[in-house]
Image (cartoon, rainbow, N blue to C red; front, side, top):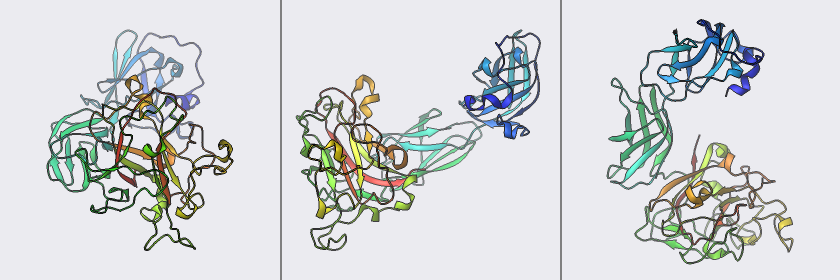
Length: 435
């Protein structure tokens, strides 16, 4: 963070030399030169502050409460010192800064470390069954005697079994209905944007199973649908990619088994003129959520990759499409790639951006499974849907016209892995508020 403020406090010094004596702090301010008169008495975790005073080159260590800061001598002169407030929540709160000198003297200066209200990012599985271990993931989870850390789900208090600054561990109570997550600390209360057992803005949940509640939307494109309802189900039917015996090669492109690793949904009908509502028509997905707010939303789904069939090659390509690209009446098998990359020249002039979900690339041993449990995946629409199929940057980015159809397929992604026989179980595909 400090690098962007290099010129804000003082000109960069010559070679730093630790001096004797003790420092004097006159005041602390924000580092921005345009706000140099903004004197502050406290700052939030991980923010940068500028100490102004005398003989600051005598400082060899700084503590904010009980947390040691990292000093960079490139940002220290006799009269100014730039430092980041540590990002870890203090345990012993004294509301003081401790300046340790070369001679091991300690100078105290009153300064508060401010901690934000808790941040709730996600949970391990937003459809977690009662009795199973759960985890809330976020930041600024803290506890003290006066205000203990508190968790509630769908309005019901939940016992916390363990926590650190970034995670809360618990066992999911039985019988909870849909609702939000609430976390309270001494620094405030936060309510999650997401819901436990989310039902809002659902795109695909029963995957066309006629005897189950849900949107009823199903695969209606080129690929053969693989809808399952068995002992692995978390909310009725789910969609499966892979059969456990079919191989995906290192690049996930050669002899690609399309029917096993693709799902397509196209809006429209075979009528002339084509219709997009009523009997015999498939609706536009854009009618199921507020497309005007798409930049603040994420595509979410639950994923199960069994340890018996891990994933180590290719990307799960997640592609929204518009009416100008493909509908039921204009179906083709080439719209998802650039025309220049198709030997017959029949691809789309510039294929839309898509997200490439490739968790195995950062997993230990470059192989990924979900530990024989379901997990929730969140893909932000604005920041993640920026790729072309080979991992390069897309030429045509998304806008609100591009959310009428949807395709997902395990293919390419511009990364090379290892031969695998993966199984991906997917459920509860939805577009929901994310920020």
